[in-house]
Length: 333
Image (tube, rainbow, N blue to C red; front, side):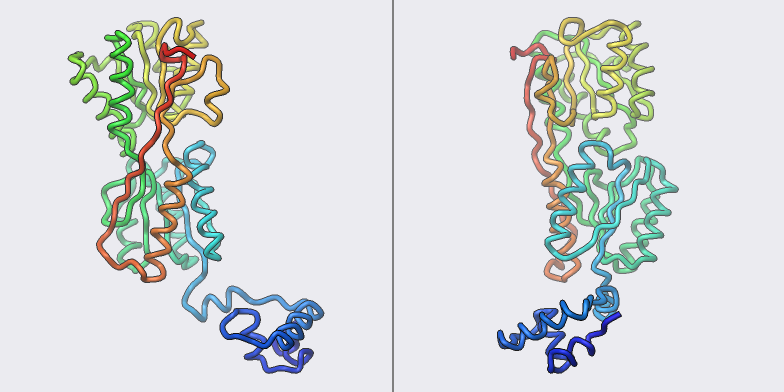
């Protein structure tokens, strides 16, 4: 394998000059630069990025832990993170926690062992927050993404309560009085915030809270389908609002199994929704959170902590989602 000395010898320059050309650390005359670049190509020299990073006490990598990157919102967040990291010359190491606190703790341990320069974490429902705090105490910058609260760290997510309140009030304005919520796991901070918006809307609309109309559980599609099937059979709400993409899938699967459709048999809306929601027929009313922007903003904040340009107390950034009303809630096309 070619070394920097081989390049310097072929180009007739010092190794420090080769380093300046490769790393851009000092101006080099065009003629000299040309000889060095030609020597690099001729020798097939490749810079040892890991060794260089270790000399700087950096690994030029960051860790990203989410519950399931196949979920549309997390996938978009991951793309936002990756774009900013790539522009900064960093590699993203991705881990899926599977909504399991033990897997999350293991992922934190593995990434810490790899000496990542920083961590982005969407904590699981019953996360071992002391594990995250221990990573912070060791000096590794951490930013919570999407699921906020519980740790003294920078945090970036979407507004959840107000959009859900607006969505449910919209249903009430259409005359619905029995509005169900497919919540899922309220141990997840985002779901808890959306449930709060649902309850606030009922109160504002003068509607009683009926616990039988709130579907909880794991939040997984299969579990939600089973629970929503019972809800639709026994309690027949006139409207259903889902708190996530997974619970939305469960609701729609339950309706299909019972031969029900929206908006003919019940009005329907969801938080998050699906990619290309506007292609569904009927179109699905949905709250679209700015997931890509959340990921990008979280990565920018993490970079500021890594390079030391941001030394203030932890910041919390909330971005505004956008609600699009379509036919599934009874609105015209």
